[in-house]
Each structure stands twice: as structure tokens, then as C-alpha cells.
Image (cartoon, rainbow, N blue to C red; front, side, top):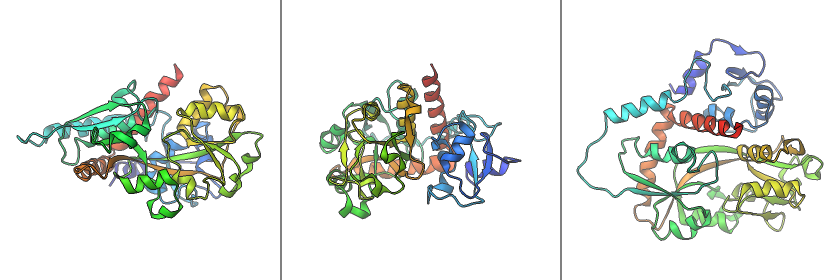
Length: 356
């Protein structure tokens, strides 16, 4: 039994309405956005998705009536009587007690990531952010006991163009995996990701929202084809494969790709782009920082779901060995519930930082 399944069973009362710290039974017409708005006062439903990943991963845009969802507490706890970090502490103690011993020297694995992608990767956050903590933990789970180093190079494209192919680093944290089964529909960069790099199992699944000004003609889009002709902003090095497989690629749309997500938010407010699409946590943080949430319309009907992964170059002779090691750790973290604990504690820290 998984930790999340056990949490559902342990809750004694189902919520009659959407309330945090309970479970909720889906009704006809519910969406993740509407449930989040009622429970938390925001359309950002990432926390609900994190807590119900197994139930929602198949089709998060279509909720069957009767589905039971955990609505976590606002601080990320799955139940009112649970404690954040408890699974992390338990698994760490277990690892220390059963640490494998070897006299064979193996050089530390060299990870590279970047700053300024909160709450996922940033040196100012505990453990370097959620994704860096996942990498570090995976290296000590699933029978692994390998040393590692993490460096921050704040130019994402250099990871792809130079640092991984040259062998300067072994693994980059972290990248979207395009749908490589639809290679003929992908743009040049997404196709290159499929052919030149290997991906770990997913470490995170996130919703990419589509944000417009409230009075934009694109605010009423109800199919991806309705975005034809739009200028869509997504920061440089954030792949666009999810858009490309929906037919949204040049010349149907124009991509605008500044280096910083906040630049996209500013460009949307100034009318320089029509749509800003990125993960819900980032857009919410951007427009909150700019005191502009009331000026933005989040499309309630259209969402893409992106999976993030650790990445190695196919040219790295040990790359697949490293991916196999990381996959063992990821699998154990998912099964034990440690994955959710890392996510929840990372989001809790980030939310506290935003309130200062």
C-alpha cells in the first residue's frame, strides 16, 4: 500500500464541499481548477495533482464523477495529523542503517543545474531546491551509495550545447521530455532532445497554464487551434514540445523566448505577447510579484501536462548507467512517499519566502 493510498483510507470523513485537509468526491462538471479555487482560493491546482498523482496522471483534464481526491492542508500535509519531513527522516535513518560498503573508488557524479527557477532549483533554497534534493536523495536510495557534486551554471542552453556533450558534467537537473513518439511533429530543438539525450523516469509532473490579459481575444480559446496567430511567450530553454504536438509551432504561432520567466509576465502585461504559458507555480509567483493577478485570465479549458527528468547525453559512455541508478532511487522515493515529502517541504519553504 502506498503512503498516499494509506492517507486516503485513514481520513474518517469525506468533505461535503471543497475544503483543505480533507478528501473530496468529484462531481460532474468539476475541474482541478474549480476544486482548487474552492479549497485554496487559487486556480493553481499543482498541490492537488502532487497528492493524487497516481489517480490523475492518466487524464488530469477529465475528472470522472465519484473520484476521491486528497485535498492537502495548505502547508502540504496530507492529513491534519501528519507531519512534513517524517518520511524523509525515516528513509534517511533506514539508509544510514543499511548503507552498502565498498572499497572500490568511484568518482563522484557531476550534476549541473541553474539558479532562479524557484522552488525547483536555486542555491538559496534548502538543498538547492526540490529537484536538486530529489537528485541528491536518489543517489542514496534504491541500493545506491554514490558520491556526487552539484554545480550551478546559469545558462540552461550551455548544459545542452556544451556541458553534457563534452563530458564536463554527467547529468543536468532538470528538463522536460518531449513526446518522442511524435518525432515528426516536433520542432528542431525538441527533436534534438529526443535524439541526443537520455531521460530518467519522471521526477515531477506539472500543469502548464495558458495566461492572457483579461480582455484578450485569446482569453476565450477553447481549443489549441484558437491560439493560431498568437505570440506565445515561454522562456528560453523551456522546451515547447507540448505546444508543437498540438500544432502550435511557427508559422502558426510566434514563440517569444526571453531568458527569464518574469520577463514573459512583464511582456504580457505590456501587450508585447498574447499568451504566457509555463507551469502554474511560476505564473502565480510572477503575477503576484507584479501585483497583477487581477489583470490576468487563466484559461480554464486548456492545459498541457509536462514531465521533468534528469538528463544525460547519449555520447556519455556511462550516461545510461547513471540514469539506471537515478531511476532506482526515484522508484524507491515514489513508493515510500519520500518523493511527496520532498515536494511538500520544498513548496512550504517557498511559500514562506514569498510571504516575507
